[in-house]
Picture 1 (cartoon, rainbow, N blue to C red):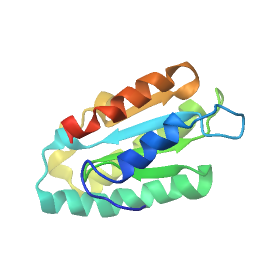
Picture 2: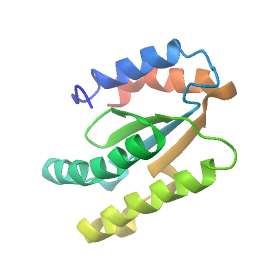
Picture 3: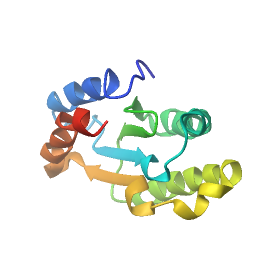
Length: 142
């Protein structure tokens, strides 16, 4: 993972990657957005959470050849190739893994997890424009 400055570096790299996306069979076809911004953690807790979740993202990189982009201290994007058969399995596994990180390391925040906002999946086939728009306006939210 490269430059991790909030609102800089990596979201622009991801935006460029998506703008040049060809949709070929060898390319990643799903963008998974992970956000813990709703937890309202302190800056120090965000750093600790980042270290713990980086382990989950590294497993995604190793097992699914995911491209991992840090967007902010609480937001990460994963670009990966999924199909109809493994999409639900893989995203459920990631969600459970991330929830477990919170439960084991930050139990006081466990009840505050908003699962609908924690993990968002964008199928780039037909929705690439949505992903690009999200990243183009990312600086306003970061």
